[in-house]
Amino acid sequence: MTDVTVIGAGVAGLCAAYAARKAGLSVRLIDRNGTPGPHGCSWWAGGMLAPFCEGAVAEPVIVAHGQHAAAFWAEVTEVVHCGSLVIALQRDRGDLDQFARRTTGHQRIDHLDTLEPDLAHHKSALYFKDEAHLDPRRALSDLVAALAAAGVQIEQAEATPDDIQGPVIDARGMAAALPGLRGVRGEMVVLRAPEIHLSRPVRLLHPRHPLYIVPRADGLFMLGATQIESTARRGVTARAVLELLSAAYALDPRFAEAELLETGADLRPAHADNVPRVTLSGRVLHLNGLFRHGYLMAPALAAQAITYLTQGTKGDLIHED
Image (tube, rainbow, N blue to C red; front, side, top):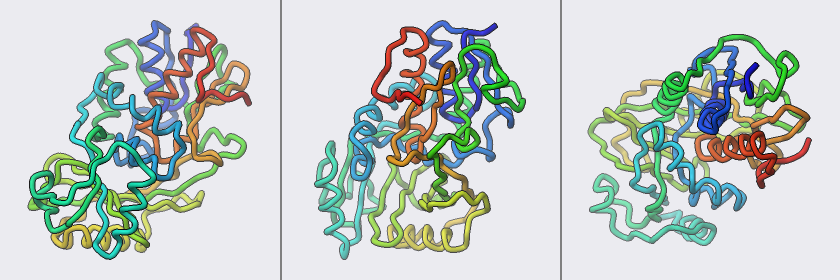
């Protein structure tokens, strides 16, 4: 018998297993696909740890808990602490002003020459200096390695909570089929543009095609992401690629010469209010509804789930079924 069984080895399940081992619990970790890969939405994430930017559209609880995510991830993987930028084209300056009113933790930058020289042609931006980012695929791999070092291996098997005795953390995302859970389709592309140098994630406020660009190693950039209310599992659409590349071109015309390396799409599970939560259902704790906040909010969900299991304390992210 183990203290807790975790079903699902995406970002939520891995964080829960890690938090459980850190609390001294014995853990069994099961996933139908085995180790993380292109079969899950955690693989296609941007990796921005940007709670203050998310405050423009997200609930305050996201901003509050998201501020602690970088410290969690720094325990297991490389986290880049150099903030993030929000930029609008000259014609959309009003959108930048509105974004500023809706968020905190930023300063107005009128000259980007020293902060991001390649974007110096943009005359104004918001700089969120306390935000960070990571490479999601490396983070998943490093978290799997940390669990293995703690004696937790991922079992590749089909499982539901009904198949397991004892406490269960269900982190299967859309596969959990929770009442009210919906799919929000996100699409992304990866480009190689070694002649463009960015140090931090950049969000471009665009009236039709908002964009974020996250720099990765070796001249790679992740561009994302569409947000479509849909449960259709399919490849990336031509429209999505066109919109993302058009917005990237507007940010820096040199992206037109970039090498298109990869496209990807998956469904992000979301509750009606778009707030991730732990839902209690008897001996089962459902960690779900991460929406676009996977790497930002998975550590907080995991911490509250394990605190509930070990101390019986309900945090603000825990809801009764």
